[in-house]
Image (cartoon, rainbow, N blue to C red):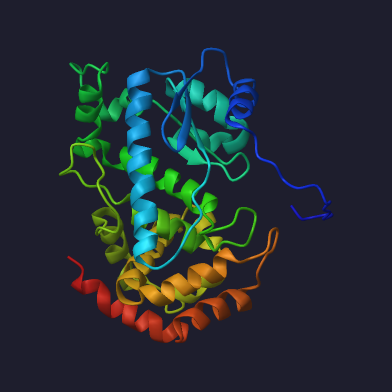
Length: 316
């Protein structure tokens, strides 16, 4: 696809009021959806109110942690008025709704953030076979926490946090929708925020912990890692769109964010400011992408790569 035409007018942009948002969105959803409101989220659901409350609590904990994290890093963000999440009662109804946007891949995706709609969409994850046991009860918040704090639910909870992080990044000024956002940065940050904590009854507690699954995947790939791996990841998104390379690309993206935020956080914030200032509908060349990166970190990519590779064995 390519942009055929750009136009603008002098009319100021006005957001929907909350009541307008509810009315307009419910008109696009199947019958039977209710709403659950938290301080920052408007959750449309046709699952149990208890599950909607559990998700609302998880989203709010992430919201507070997200803004506190960037505030500590010296980056002032804009807090959005309201964020929208859709929760379907089961996977089949979720698939029917999401397939026009996700295509056949929808069967392997348990939740996603849409740049087009600006919504998170998922379904009641306590019904997934791999996290349920025969004697499970799903009615109360206590039972929901029991199910989703199990080791087999680790990736499930991480996915919810991952997609909600994308939504926060694109609604706070950290990143800009429909601008040039390198995928390594978008995905690396979302994974940095998603790191699960199974010592917490709620399955997730904080930000920036070591991510054992991604670290193992990265370590297993280092022996065959191309010498220009960092360069290709910084300058284009092709590896993330190639199913044969995507898993390693995601692991390396997380690891680079983890490394840079630990060792050069001020420079990382400068880089985020550069990315957040990109114009709408822009598309940077590989040369611009590498120039932005090296300009923020004041080193060439080879020097950064060497430090990155030396750091990995020390991560515990």
